Image 1 (tube, rainbow, N blue to C red):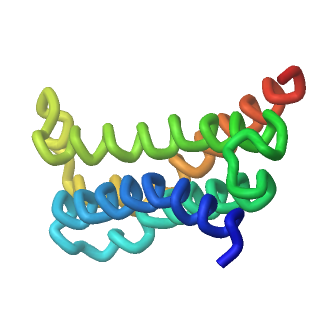
Image 2 (image 1 turned 180 degrees about the horizontal axis):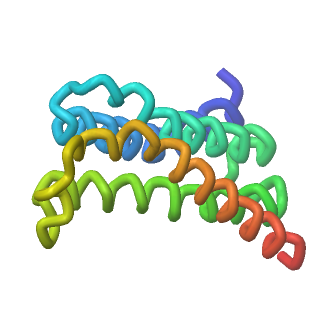
Length: 133
């Protein structure tokens, strides 16, 4: 096996493990509801972006310049952060946020759109900031 492929797989492993842990927790919070797979789409995008960054960099995070790695970080922070926060808020009913809601689980119906959109904006900001690196 080529060294670049070994390094790519080794460096991609933490991203995949974080995505798997988040996916398992999303499934637990949503209790296997109808929107679990939909909420895994932003995580899959994050893993694919990380694989692209490592592929372009020859197995190194910074091998392809600064644009893609900073774009990946810019995507991951709002996409993963917002999804984790809202699942946490739902799990503990943060400040009674879901007490009076008629269908509180519908939050998860549109959450992937919001988190992917926020991640896209973060990716653009990281991409622009990466021009100067």
